[in-house]
Structures are given as structure tokens and as C-alpha cells.
Amino acid sequence: MNKRIVKIMQILAKKNMTLDMLAEKYGVTTRTIRNDINIINELLYKYELNTLELKNGGIIVVATDFAKILKCIDKDFYVYRLSKTERVLMAIALIVDIREYITLATVAEILCVSRATIINDLIDIKKVAISYGITINSYRHKGLIADGTEFDKRWFLVKVNSSYSFMNSFISSDVIKKMIAEILYEIEHTHKKFLMERAQSSIYQYLCVMLKRNLRGYYIEEKVEAVQEYIVLAEDIIRGILQYNEVEYKIGEVYYLSVLLSKCRYMENQTFNVDSVKIQIIARKFISKISEVLDINLNNDYNFFNNLSAHLEYMLMSELIPYADNTAIAEVIEENVAVLEAVKECLDVFENYSDRILLNTEIDYITIHVCTAIEQNNNKMEKLEKEINLNEVLVIISTIIERYSVSKAEIVMPEIEKELTQYFGKTSPRLQELLSADHIRVDIVCRDWKDAIWKSAEILLNKKYIDEKYIYAMINNIEKNGPYIVIAPGFALPHESIDKGTFKVGMSLIRLAEGVNFGAEELDPVKFVCCLSAIDSITHLKAFFNLINLLTLKEFRDDLSIAGSATEIFDIIKRYENNIKY
Image (cartoon, rainbow, N blue to C red):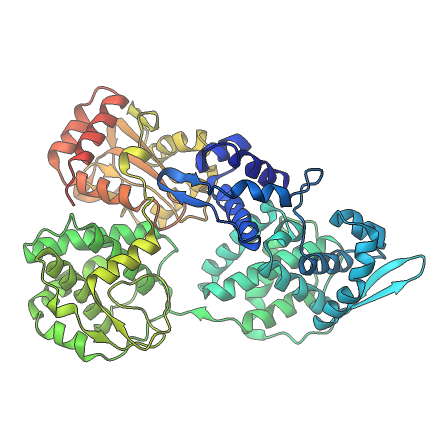
């Protein structure tokens, strides 16, 4: 636990705060503050105290017993009082981390306990270390030293780091963690080989430990037989890390990483860049088109948009889903052939952004989403109140982005909405909250579409919502994927995936003095450019949904065009958004 977290605890014991207030106070991102809150909650849980809660607007709700946690903190040191288990693990980590000997007094000083405490812990320290394949030897007048293979030492650090948050700062700094995450992301996309979430987390943790050890002068010296299929992938990851850090290139590191990568699970048929906003734009375009084909207005159905976006994200960005044969689904499809045919008419919306044809089962499940929206619109739920047997697949209609191990799932809309509420939360800000007047500029002169993106993004850049890398990534995204970000006549919504340099959810809008072409055919020229900074696939969703819907209104677009100032544009957005009926 660092100094900042201790200070945050002391502040929260005295007054109410929000994530933004704390982020501004300490000069960090709201994501960092969220991580700090998670660490504080782990400590509260450990001492059987009520945990902190986050409400709308990032308000931190503190329970009445919160101040009791301060008694567990040593005010002279920026660590909390470790339990014996934590102290033993931390002691082993310190011994493993030192190349030469480390004395009992040094261990005690670092852990802020007495030398006698470490002496009393020594038997347990040696016993626990042995369980990880590490031997702790004591030498008179020298101290303690860890003997064991480099493999065992690293995996001890990986396992402990993944299980105990207090080890995070010991393993590596936030800068190194971010650098490794970005390298791993870049190499995955270069090789078109995408690790499943759990495997990615393990490899990420290992690479953090590996770099820490390399910087200390520790390398894999033991003989390792490489897995040839993964050696190029492993070498690119290692070389990616080397270019930012002064460590030696060792073939043993590459060979061992190839072994680890060979044991991982990978996504298949990855056809999209990891970009939730792109998926949401596709979902919105599909809803608009299916509404026209069916002559039923589903554009204002936020639940439909939410559910379909989640399902598409899993369907198009993950391995093929092994849908189970199901008579209940087949019956719904048979009774809604017209809807199925309408869906097929709209498939080009998906296939324009994917290099594969959708499977019949995938089309069926998209059709189920449309049927659900229609039934909900008509207040008729009978067709969907059926039992569906699934094993290790999605709970289909709810499409929470997660796999469930279930033998039976009743698809009932009230339950679906309940689960969605729990998953997505109720903290999504509205458009007027993300696009305040100080995030809007009018009559900006731009040379071309790239200049327009830069000038829109500069508002967020100057407010430290994003970094410059994010702006370059947005431009590269359009160059690679085309002008799909032009979402309405004269209106572009540039964005990129969340790990390309975003720190805080936000939007910024410029109105150009003269429109520029993005190559979007009938939607050109673009007069408005709204930069979106997303931190996940959820938080911006309500604002995004409202913006898309408002842009379907010609009168809204006309009012934006004739507004005389940023304040007037904000007032227009607020007025129209407040009149939206869901």
C-alpha cells in the first residue's frame, strides 16, 4: 500500500469525495483511483468492515465504520500491517529478489517489523518457500539466500503477485506494466494470434516478473527446448520489451516463453481489432437498417442496443461460440420467418466489417435479439419464456460478456434486465455530462480530415483524457478500416480501442468552419467531429446511444449548425437529450 492510498483513506474518513476529485488531487487517472479503491476494499474486507461503493458520477460512498480501518495503518510507514501469511510471502519475495545475501535485520526493516518477528517467522518462511521449489538457506554472519531454479523463483513471484494485491508495486511500476500491456497487445495483433483472457493475464504477469528479474541481472540459464510453432511470437515479444529496456537478449528467455505460449489458449477467427466502439457503431447501424426493413422503430430501445452490442462483441471478437442445438430457439425462428428474412437483408452491415460469412446459428441468435426487442416493444413475452439447456456457452439473450457453467437457464426478460443492470451498472454518464460547453469549439478551420481529428482530440489531450498516441491511433484506424466513423450526414465520431492511450472517459466536439471529406460518400462533407475517449466498453454507452439517436433528427443537426457558440451547442444537446423517451 503506497502513500497515496493511505492519504486517500485518511481523506475519506473525513469527507465525501469522487473519483475525479481524487484523480485531480493526486495527478493520476480515474482508473488508478479505481484500483486504489479496490485495494482499500480488500483491506476493509480482511478486517470485516463495510467496503466502499461507487455511485453515479463516481461518488465514493463510505460506510459509518470506515474510520476503524485507520487503526490498522502504521502512521509512521506507508504500509498496512501485514498478516503473518502476507509477511512470510513478502519476506520470501525479498530474499528471492536479492542477488547476494540479505540479513534478517534488513528484511525486518523493509517490512516494518522487529527482527524478533522475522526470526519467529523463519521456520514458516523456509517451509512455504520449499512448497514453491525454493530453498531458503541461513548463513552465520551473512544472512539469508534463496536457492532454486530461475523458473521456480519467477513462478513464485507470479503466483503471489496474482493472489495478493500488496505485491503489485513490488513486482513492477505502473509505467512498466503499461508498457508490457501495450507490447503484448501490439504483438498479438501483428501475429493475429489472440490469447484468451486468463492466458493473457498469466503471460502479462509473467512478463512483468521476467523484466524485473532481467533488470536485476537474472536470466533463464537452464536448458530449455523451444516450441518451434511459438518461437517467432516469443521472440517478437522479447525484442519488443528489449527496445524499451536496457537488458540483454538471451535465447533462453525466448525458448522458455515459447513453451509458456504453447500452453495457452487462443481465440480463433479473430476478425476485429479490439474496439468496442466500432462494434457499437455496427450494432447501431444494424438496428437502424432492421427498423427500416421491418417498418418498426427499434432505434430508441436502449436495452436492445445494449444486448446486441454485447452479443456482437463476443460473437465477432472471440472464438466461434459452440452454440448448442435447441428446439426452443428453432421454434421461435420458425414462428418469425419474416424477421429472419429481414435480418438476412441486413447482414451486409456485419459482413462489411468482417472477413467471414456469419454462420446460420449466429444469424438465428441475432434474429432472437430482434424478436425479443419486438416482443418487448409489444409487451408480449410468451415466446421467450422457455427453458434452454446450455453448457459452457453464453446465456443467449442476456449475452452478458461472460461464460456461464449452467445446466439450465430460463430466458425471462425481467431476469435478463436484472443481470444486465448488475453487469453494466447504473453509472453511465449521459451525453450532456461528457460533452460540456468547455469540451466544445465552433468554427474551427481544418485543412483535411486528419487535421479535423487532431483539432477535435486536442481538447481531450490538453485536459489529459488521452495522450498523443491515441490521436495517431485514431488516424491509423480510419486509414486501415475506412470512414465507418462517419455515423451521420456531416458528423464523424473518431475513436480507438481503450489501450491506445486513454485515461478518462470523455468527448470533445468541434464544428468546422468549412466541411472536409472523409471519403464517406453521401455522408460527406463532415462539418462536426466528436472525439470519443473510452476507458471500457460500458461507461460511454448511454452517451453514445443518445448521440446516435439525436443525429437521426434533422432538426437537431440543423440547430447545431446554426448555434452561435459552444454554450448554445451544449444547451441544444441538453434540451434534446432531456426530451429523449426510452
